[in-house]
Length: 220
Image (cartoon, rainbow, N blue to C red; front, side):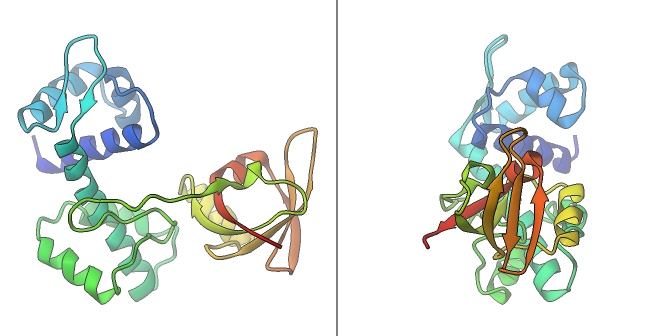
């Protein structure tokens, strides 16, 4: 089995783990869009590396060793995204697919040099934390925009998901990381928010969008 496939499994396990999901064969099958027998076979292979512990009909245990291995893959991906965005001028909606390919490059020297050139960034273009060279991740303290109240002011710090559709929508609305957002009004009917960005533009966003924006509150 190609190493890149194993690495994609590790990333899927990591995503389910940090989101607090119960890791089982069915969830992995859905996330990776492959059959359960295929997942079952791969889990056995990952177990041989000490990355997971699995017993039939029980949740998959993602070991500390497996978490570190996954974090190092994610580190390569997110460093690549920063490099593409800041050095090469790619938009934040363009970097994911390229980084998906580059994350499987084995040379740690390449990514360490990239990290140095970028002055050791802690987050990627979407605000997600970049694991360090030891696989450690700094804890982030964000809140969903949808949880704030009328009159609150905040700054966009990260995205809960970085789907291409969301990124293009935010581009259209001229919302990016660091944008100051004030909540003008919350609609009781559907939870949509009327917001003002950088004290300039006022418009309404849906609850779905508000749930996807992670912010830090600014005290008035």
